[in-house]
Each structure stands twice: as C-alpha cells, then as structure tokens.
Amino acid sequence: MLFFLGRTVWTKIIRNNTAVDYLFNAEAYDFNYQYENRLPDRVKLYRGDEFATRCIYNTMNKDVITLGGERTKDEMCLHMATYYPRMDNLYGCMTTNSPDAWLAKMNISSPFDYNQLQEWLQSLKWTPERVAEWQEFYNTVPRIAIYGAAPNLQFNPLPRIPEYKDLKPVICTRDQTTPGQSPATRTTASQGSTKPTTVAFNSAVRQNVLTFFPLISIVMKIIIS
Image 1: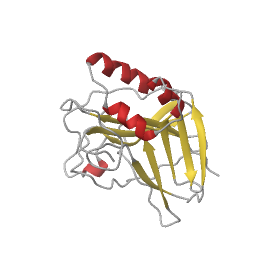
Image 2: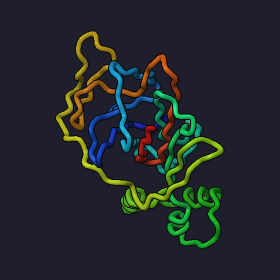
Image 3: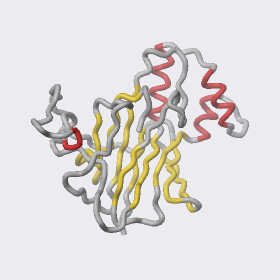
Image 4: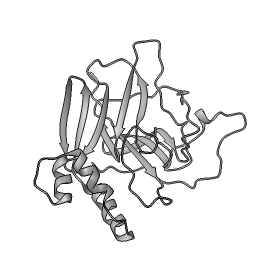
C-alpha cells in the first residue's frame, strides 16, 4: 500500500541471489484503485528464499519534504500477503535507516530523537543537487531489519541493501490483458516475467497475514521449518 504520491510497487522472489519472479507487480499504482489480487496458482517458497520490495513515488509537484506515516498526506510502502502454513513467530518484516546513519547525516552526536530528525528534514532546502545526494544516501545507507512478532522482535543490521541478479527486461506494451481477463490475473509486462501477478496465498489450511513495511526497499529471508 502507498498513498497519493505512490506510482509503482513490486515485490520479487529472490532465490540464490537471483530474482526468479514477481510476487506482485503494480507498474501503474493508483491509490484510488486498490484490490485484493488473488493467485490463480499457488507459489511455493523454499528455505532461504528472499523478498525484495520497492516503492516508487512522484513528488515533482511538491516543494516540501514528504514524511513517512499513516496519514494520507504522508507516505508508506506496505505489502501484505496471505500464506500457509502459519508461522506463529513471524508477523512481518520491516527495514529502517540506521539511527547512527541519521546522526551522521545530521552531523550531530546527541542521542537519536525522531522529532529532532523530523524538524531537521522539514528545514532542508531542496535543489537538484540535493535530490541526487539524497538518492545516493538512500541507495547506500545502512539499515536495521526488524522481523518476527511482538514481543519477540529480532533486530539485525544490514550494512547495505543486498544485491541480486535481476529479471531480464522486456518491452512493456500499453495493455497485455487478454479479453475478459481481470486485472488480478494480468500478465506482468516488464522485467521479464510472463506469469500472472500475485499477492495472496490461499488455502483452507491454517493461514496468516504477512506484512512488509519497507521504507525504501527490503530484502527478507524466508525461514521455512
């Protein structure tokens, strides 16, 4: 889920450091047109599989910063999927920039304070050079991966976003939906996947909802017992 500035969101399945398919791909995301995308076929995950989620925004019509948050005037990058069998110790996974990285960016040594960070971000004057500088910051900044279920959340440092071999790009046509086909089974038109896009695992067996909260992008390792 994104808000009004969101334009694209996708999650890829990474296996052995290689993207093998999309779990979900919305190249043209619209906040006003959201739906549950059911799988036409089940997707099997294996021990060691990873998810990479990325959201793309357009703020060209703004001259002030957009903060992350739950209000529609803010932004988020959230992806939910239903899966089975249920894992009682895993509810979701999120990444956030390392507090130490924020302190270094602000050039201060005091303890990390989110309100202070928010005020500092809102005071910045944006130029094309600063935009490029911040994009590089987000591409390389160390992160903290938080996963599990309360009250037993796990915190693991990520020196940087793990790299992987991506899907082969293909030419994107205006609409690859076949006659009578719903958007839920529309074929992916970019990055090389021709399988139906997916977001939910369905079964009469025990189910649970797995939520991803990536601020920019996340890579999550699946541990299947």
